[in-house]
Length: 124
Image (cartoon, rainbow, N blue to C red):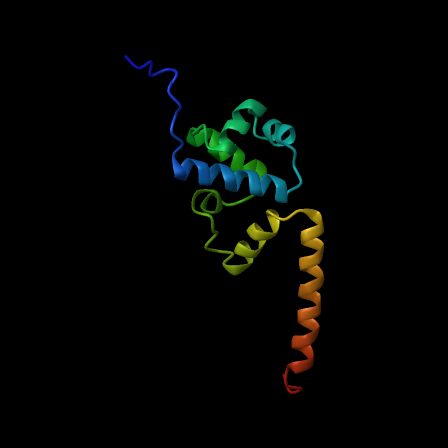
């Protein structure tokens, strides 16, 4: 007979995605797990499990995390913020980059903007 308590718990892909977005938002804000846990009035152990997709949460805890991260619930739940559009997607992507990658991307955006400005018609 199998011991169900020792069986490895299957991770729900939606819960895992929510956890990944919480982690990305936390890192984009420059918060440590300890700082976010304190701001959301929860424990680092709970937050760690949420970020790994090993723990779901009540709407109360979800609300506290969203407020502490200063992001929309749409972003955390669905991966996009309808009000932000492409800028939100770009912010999510940049939030996953390390500081060196962010710097390289920013420099390339500045170079691209300069190229586009030189190609733009003069009457605009």
